[in-house]
Each structure stands twice: as C-alpha cells, then as structure tokens.
Length: 310
Image (cartoon, one colour):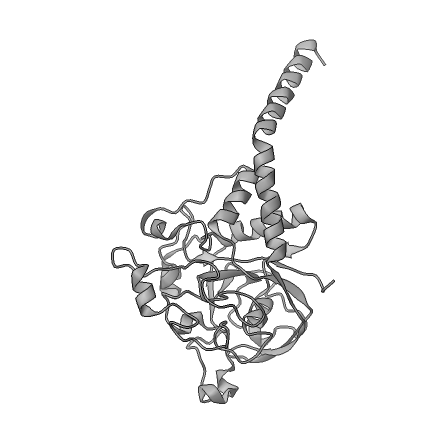
C-alpha cells in the first residue's frame, strides 16, 4: 500500500473513532436502557391448545352468532402452541427513536393529519418492514430470538390463553370508562374535531396475563403473510401462516374504530411497505391514506421471544 494511502486510512479511522467517542456513550446508554426495559416488559405465555377464529358461532354469550362480518376467520380450528414470551406493551415512538439513532436511520416522522397523534409514549406508526427490522435488531443486540408474533400467538395471548374473550381487556368485555376510554375521554383528546387514533401505552388495565391493549390501540402487525382461506388448511401445531404472499396480517384496530374492529378475532391486511393501489382502498378503506412515502399512524407492533420459560 502506498504511504499516502496508509496515511489517508489512518486519518479516516481516527475521525471515525472521534465521532463515535462523542456520540456512542450516550446512545449506548439509551440502547442499554431500552434493552432492559424490553426484557422487563416480557410476559411468559404458557403454551396450550385453543379454538382459533371467530368463536361467536359456538359461544352462548354471543347467541351463537359470529362476532365479525368477514369470512376469513370463520373456520374455527384447533391450534396448539409452545410457550413464548410476549411484550406487554407496544413499541413507542420513544423506543423506536433509540433504534433509529443507533442504526443511523432518520426518525419516524408523520406528515399531515396523523402528525397530531405522535408523542413519545404512544404506539409508533410504522410499516411491517420497519417493525420486522426493529425486532431483528433487538434479537441481534440481545442474542435472544425476538420477532414479530405469529397470528396464532397474537390471538392466543389476546384471548388470555385462548379463552372465548371478544376483547383483550381485563375481563374480556369492552366497557367504556372502565377498561376502555369513555366518550368524554375521547372527546378531550380530539384535535379540531378529529377522532383520536391512538392513546398512551398502558393507559387502560392489562388483560390477566399482564399484556396491554392488544388490538385496542392501533392495528398490530404480526409475522404471517395473509391468506384468506389459510384457516381452512392451517397446521394444528405452531402455525406460521402461508409460505408466501403479497400482504401481511394486521390484528385489532383502535379506540376510534368500531367495536368490531377491536375484537380479538378480527383480521386485516396490508402490504409490508404499505404501498397500495385502487383495489387496496376498496378492500381496506381504513388503511387507504397510508402511503409508503410517509409513516402511518395506526399500524404498530410489539415483539415477542420464541423461548420456553427458564
């Protein structure tokens, strides 16, 4: 190597080291704090079997009528899961900001109407790709198998280990003012007459497992590709969704959605990067305004860990 090339390399390394020494310690403290917080917020979900899908048809409390209008969740089927850890809370804007800074990415920024809902302790609005990458980053940082939950894992936890619970609340019911925001509380948080889309994380009671707001505070990404008829041929043991597809599954909705949209059995879908075409807007109008060129504000996530209890 020529002398000037060696000198240039030394200077480059020195400048890089100086930059890192100025920036890394503070950021590393934030990363360490996030890792500890994430670990503390994991809830172990003991494995077991349950009937996955719209159980209204066999539930006397529902008059043995389906809870939802769609057809993609009507095939009630047996599912058996191994135990795993689920994050008790969704990932917040504050959490995600630590990740983007650590990886040198720009902060998530919401433009237009949704900007009013962005604050540190509300669920971050991101695409599936961004959610997946965050969980993978957490896995790399900790050496533990963090990932997005499968659709079956998500529903099993939301339903308090597979009970016939329509809502992921403290008792399976939805009672505004008790385990969901009252209409008065919703009005207080509106801006310019617009209905709020998300609320503070852990602002209502957790379900008995200790998990907050599953399906009640934004559409939550899961790992599975969407298949309209997947329930009809899903394997019983640890199903992971179709092997391929064009859209990813979203579960739940938000307090501004209809009560049906917050049901533990409600399914939705969107492209991993949230791009869309005219047919998407017809199939899922609630996601119609979300484009890949700006961050969404209603599609969020939580991570889980595929480990047995230890």
